[in-house]
Image 1 (tube, helix red, strand yellow):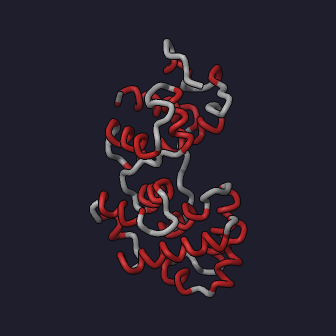
Image 2 (image 1 turned 90 degrees about the horizontal axis):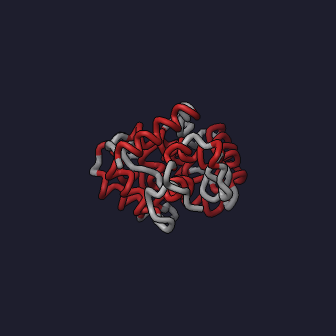
Length: 219
């Protein structure tokens, strides 16, 4: 299984090249982007991130103490901005209390308990938490989003109804515990999912088509 997954990874890397994820100038900016992109397009979240940057709010203490009016105005492009403002403040407050607002401690803390702590922050679900841990914290956690689950299920690596945690555990148990690998694989699965492995798949042109020899894809 490990060899097959690595082969798929190499084929995707050959076709799409390095994806350079997650865009951001600092760990806190990446974490804020992960929260702001919940249920919205990245282009909209990126506008909100840029507005936070322009106002000097991409820092845990600055964001936690910013006036409501300023914060809400900045993140309005991301949609559901009142809810996301609360989630940003809750995350910033957790980071300040737990690690003094810095990510150095997050990179060293035991991963299992740290993930459980983050999941207890209001509004942070598994996908957001794992994106923060992987992309902002550099921890070996796989982000098992919808694209990843769809591609892996269609290639019969997972059952069609595999949930988030099952998919995450599958990847983490079958590949080296390497954040750089998980980072690139997640981004590449999104690339192939958006380009070929759509709701109605375009299998004939997909770079992963050879993997399906003798294994008809699930639809």
